[in-house]
Image (cartoon, rainbow, N blue to C red; front, side, top):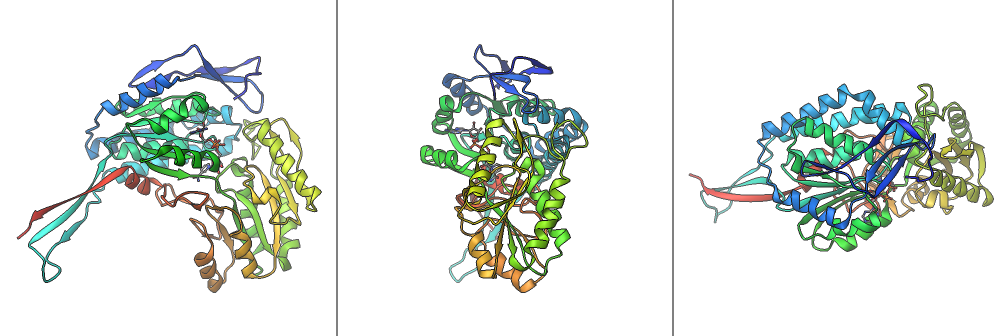
Length: 484
Ligand code: NAD
């Protein structure tokens, strides 16, 4: 979001808010700008507190009674439409986020997967049955379970880094469970959210099941998390805002997917070419802006020089710049402010004794893939989440050191491990304080169906992923019947 742009992009879009199927414009708007060119690519309306109330009340007044078949049909059609429109959709994300076409095409594939999995899950009745004649005082009865949609409204608040997939991960499980949602996407990338909502209506979603509002969070966020008819807030974003939401939400369910500071841990038996390839992909894909990006490389000291050399070599070949250039691996980061923060953190580390091996060059929101070594775990660049294409290399001596350094930040999202030693793999799986451990994969590896989420400051332990989100968006009811 910038208001300094003087010229408009040819594909300029003036989006309208979506409340109960009405498309509403407002005199007050927010500009959306392409981080690479600075061009204005669109505007979105700024909702007032009254608009937010109306969106929540509209959602609340509607009751969805779609059959499992109907829900699956809508989600399958949405998956098909997303796949058909991959270029249009990925162009839109690239324009408003600066992410490269390679990254945004990949994101669209993930969005289609989310809808596909949600369609399949909608068809699956996961009710359980318990016989009651199990003990001496048992009875001839059975207890059954069923998941029911919430009585109130789900508020979904999403971050900027995967403009469509973050929205899909909240909206698809809600549709699959017959819930009603008010979505507030990031004001940095709101056009993708409006696009996806329109696509879902086209796929047959009853419009009151999904409202989309945008605006200044300082003005509207409080109403979103405290309105009496909001029963669950699902939030993905930074730790500070997540904790503020948890404090404000009171007697409501809160699902928080917060920041990460994920290590890639490389042990001395590792194939270094394979480890270095994972390291750079994990560090630079999506411009390093993944909650599960590799934010620290922990490397056993004996192999650190050889590993570092490979990482530097691959980094120099990681092309970046114009996000629409098909030959570029990486586009920009979200805005100039973010790029300047990475540069400042790297400069601070250099002043404290780290060594620059590649990158740390900045033009506007373009920030070169950057490698630094001789990094100490106490330096800000690795103690805090550095949400960009920076590869800090930390050498360690013993397995105990690796585990201690890995667990030594406030975060606990995911991790990657490069070793073939089964005895050590078991130790890391048991002792890393994280939500996931991926052996010979980047920390971000997952499928859209499987449970995903962190502990410590990265989240309260309630998971996302289509299946877990469907559970958290429902109430589990039991009922019992005479049986026999
Ligand atoms: P952010 O926390 O700045 O913003 C996230 C959302 O919160 C935006 O929609 C914003 O408008 C809204 N918001 C701002 N102030 C608010 C308030 N007071 N109350 C309620 N909502 C408010 O995050 P960001 O910069 O957009 O995203 C990057 C962060 O998200 C990183 O920390 C990243 O690790 C994290 N993230 C986590 C996951 C995960 O699954 N754990 C996934 C992606 C991103």
